[in-house]
Image 1 (cartoon, rainbow, N blue to C red):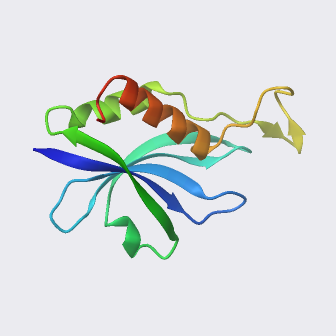
Image 2 (cartoon, one colour; image 1 turned 180 degrees about the vertical axis):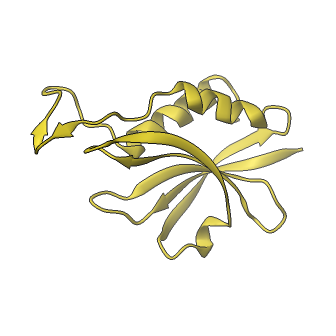
Image 3 (cartoon, rainbow, N blue to C red; image 1 turned 90 degrees about the vertical axis):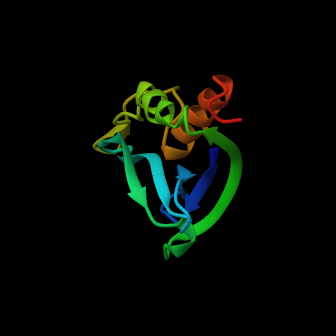
Length: 123
């Protein structure tokens, strides 16, 4: 048995929000693995129970990434916690780390997905 894993995109400003969603229940609900916050204050990692993404008013897109076995499901949270969330990157309108590309939820999610696939947690 396995659970399907998705990249979920929700409307946001200035850019859309990206998160990993694992469908764990027959009603298509599951768990979200994401970072929240902003580049002015920094972001934090969180996981939460969620209804099916399409039920949200901000839903934009859901792309199947693969699946995770029941045995490996707990490893998603463990590995996501190892990826540093984007830190505070601006102070009083000034970029704190010139020359370093900005990191938001999109970049964190992309890195998390790549790591989960590299370790064959998602296949």
